[in-house]
Amino acid sequence: MELRILKDYEINNIQNIDEEKLIFIGAFDEHLVGYIGIYDFYRIDYLYVNKDYRNRGIGSQLIELVKKYAFNDLIVKGHPYFEHLGFINDHGYDIYHCQTSNTFKSYDEVQNFIASQKSRVYALTNFKNFMNDMANPQLLLKCIHIGGTNGKGSTTNYLSSVLQSEGYKVASFTSPALVSRLDIMRINGQSIDEETIIQYANRYMQLWLNYELSMFEIEVFISIMYFISQHVDYALFEVGLGGELDATNIIEPLIAVNTNIGLDHTEYLGDTYEKIAKTKGGIIKDNIPFITGENKQECIDVFRSICDQHHSSLLQLDSIENIHLDQNQVIYDYKNYHVTLNTTALYQANNSALALDILLYLRDNGLIHLNDENLLNGLYEAKWLGRFETVNENPLIIIDGAHNKEGMEAFYNSAKYYTKIKIIFSALRDKDTHAMIKLLLRLTDDVTICEFDYYRAQSAEILAENFPVKIEKDWHKAIDDAFYHDGVVFITGSLYFLSQVRPYILSKK
Image (cartoon, rainbow, N blue to C red):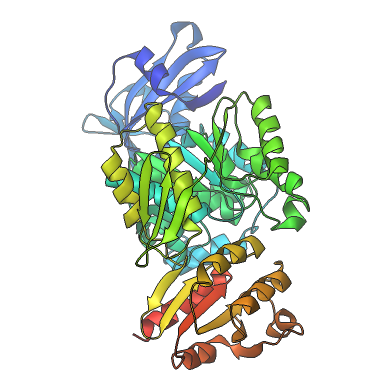
């Protein structure tokens, strides 16, 4: 017997229900034979089994499933049927007390537990089985899925900003975090709180262990359940790594997105553009449109082939015209729109135009309401930490997470308009840092290589090779010295590096 979340049209076929906090789960044996409705994760309002399928345990299976969704007590109007399923009668209601552990008392304990699980897996079997046994709650969310080598976070941020400008409640799942791990799950820019994470961990820890979920799978699951509980209008999921086997690929989006293809994470994704495009194209699903900002023909050919297999339309970014900087703003024309961005990072033209195209597709297909004023205001108001972000004015200090060769090329094209440049750089071991440092030296001969505390970080000596650069292992000292620089200071490289650097600089103001 298959148990799964019912879609809107299936619910409407049951009866006319207009209650956003009511979730229906159906039992299927080739066709719908029963359903249960749970209100806001705590109250059973509906339970029905077709008379031809009764006495087969279908009702019991549905009840056992909704027990997994409840956090504290699950209640239902009193009936003898529920009492043999663990419910206790109390003043006309039957109450089930959920089995929640008290293993975790603090957020740090939860983080240590999650971090102790497999860091990432390269198969989705366990996670799919887990979500299937939970009736695939992710189907309740209206999602947009954003993959690519660079620009995923920025594109997600532009989408979120515009949708919020229109008045929608927007969730986002992005990684890595720049300030706190809590930041990977946000609603209207507000991060999930520690107490909520603790609650989810105490409720589901044993299930996570039973299914041997990885750290990233646990975080994706928490985000899904949290977004559902908060009744968001749209949920934006950024791919963590690759696409096909990434934990976020459990969702069923309104549209799937690829920003671009670069030769990054080649040990996992492949060593050619075609191989990486095939892996990232794994987020393409049946009859769901796919849009990309990539223009390399070998990648487009791969995407088109995958889209054909899934009967999905392939959409491509049009030409962006008249890109220029004017008074610390990026300005360009795209289709019929004159766009202004509140940034000096020229590479954000591509990310914002891709977001614009996604939004136009959703609007044209009746999936969102959006007026042009909110569209343009949302693009202008978008702020994304760590992407050409000014963190100090005197001296001017700009941080940018150019964490691979393609990202560094984009950074270079924006940074080259500045003079009297000083650069502080550090990166991870698995990056093409040789090509990255060559680009940095085209900007200035004042480049300092540092180290930072992270298990994948590269040593300063190996990063420096034989380049004419300075080595200062202690990044704190490099930044302290940079405050005396007469010009602009760029701090770039790994986002994990910036996550440590950024609060240090802000604390000195």
